[in-house]
Image 1 (cartoon, rainbow, N blue to C red):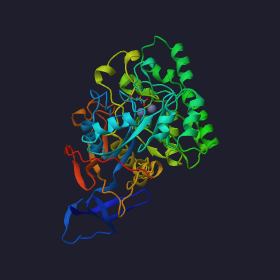
Image 2: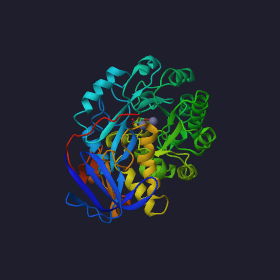
Image 3: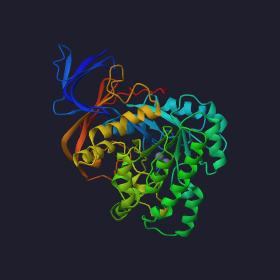
Image 4: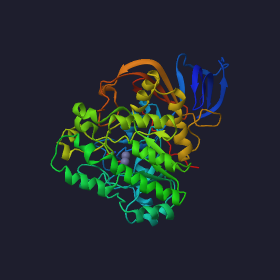
Length: 443
Ligand code: NCD
Ligand code: ZN
Ligand code: ZN
């Protein structure tokens, strides 16, 4: 199989940035040489002036197969991922039908297998009565538990029957299964109470009032209390408030991890005026003080990773009145440009971006062979141009929903080439449709 070398680039790991050459052979990294090297007589790709990242791993996407393929499918979702430098995605189970047992997982697996251009893994979803079936499941990234619904009953969300709003059931998942638990931690009763209070209001900004920070705090506190009691591996999805972060700091252990989304890092409730329902998402965008707390938590290690919660909905659905619009924003293509722009603004380092978007996701989720540029690891590689300054435009967005809250944002720093298993799958604004994505293994 193909052998080549990436020459004249700057290699970025979670620890350092250095001049180096990456030798690729048979879909794997053959070796890394520090300093510049002429690479002998094998094929060379000159990446002078560019940075070489391990391919990004997004542990939280909704690619909508089966049942929601009008919003997203793997052809579009994986191209959006590639254009965003993302080479592996872990896909959520809130499909129609939802992934709730081995049988529904196999059905989804069969559909995705020949459509994925990136590597992938799948979650199963917890319900009130499937803990036994979940305990038996094989080959999943983890179990998604919605402590608060994002369901149709709660106006326009898409989590279907996946809801575990009682702590007894949560406790069963903690004690009777071995899988990684990924929590959507918003307290259901709390949300319902605020819904009654704000019933009838159609200003999209009411979304952040209905799903008050207190609802997230309550759920996180309950979940972490329980996780600590059982020393139970637990991951908190989309942490968005200072109060959650304080709680995580109090309970933090190696087995407790947390993610933050780009939309919570870059949008606040002040943005409803401009974007309306486009930024309606669960948990909601928060106030600027919460956002400052998220950036601090990235710096001090309270937050382990950035994941997109890429949750596409149709523009036509988003254009409905607030009470009928679905929650969720797409993000898999824009995460890396937003973070690289933040590097250029001096808000974060390149090493930290790699730690948050590939190294930690691989290590903390046990994704084998990924997250590091080292001999023997998979040649999933993202080439970054830190000079390139461009306007985000829906014309160049691959997601089937074809919009982004970041449309028209001018950013500096973009992925320009993306390799999956040593295959060039994307080159600036051009994607190559080979369905070579493989399901990942976990260790
Ligand atoms: C998600 C979706 O649309 O699938 N929406 C969201 O607002 N995050 C559902 C979810 O995970 O809550
Ligand atoms: Zn969620
Ligand atoms: Zn989600």
